[in-house]
Length: 204
Image 1 (cartoon, rainbow, N blue to C red):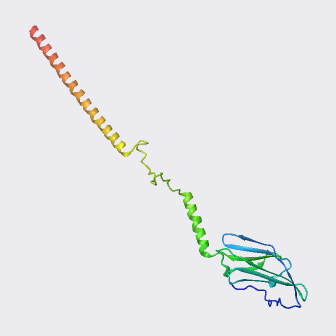
Image 2: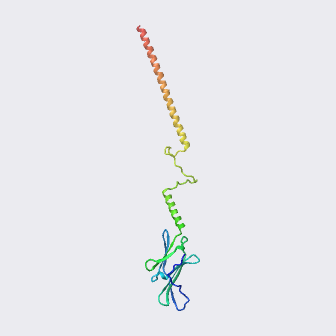
Image 3: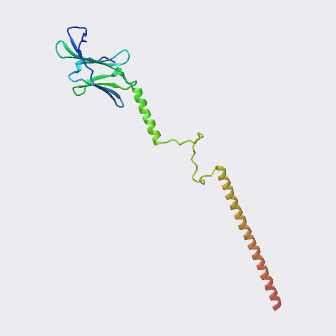
């Protein structure tokens, strides 16, 4: 990252004529979807008193030197480990409300894309749940609503064959009844005809 400084020359802490009072400013981390934020409470400090940089270990270093008198300074230097997805090269710092100094560190773009893709995948899975598998690892298949519930394909075939046999048998029974009725009618007509002939002969 580029070093952010207030334009001051680095103080010579070995100079015996200067007095330094070391402080440890309260601080805390927060984050949102795109950035990490490190906030330090630094009342009395100004932006020109603060420097931030990255050391050789990849850590964030925040340093401040505030002059109180000609020979007296209030100073601090804090080193912070940053999250793995932090893009420390693009970090920058500024005062938010006069005494809260905020270091803003963008999250790496690839990590942000992965988070977005993961969120989309989760949303799709919630809207389109996958069918649950059986204990043997197979999945339930949706069956036609025309089939009787709870029957296997072989049972459906036997039912269809049985229904067809019933239809054919019923048709044959109807044909047989019609034939018997026709024969009976003919016989009756023949008997009536014979009776009429006999009567006519007797009267003649």
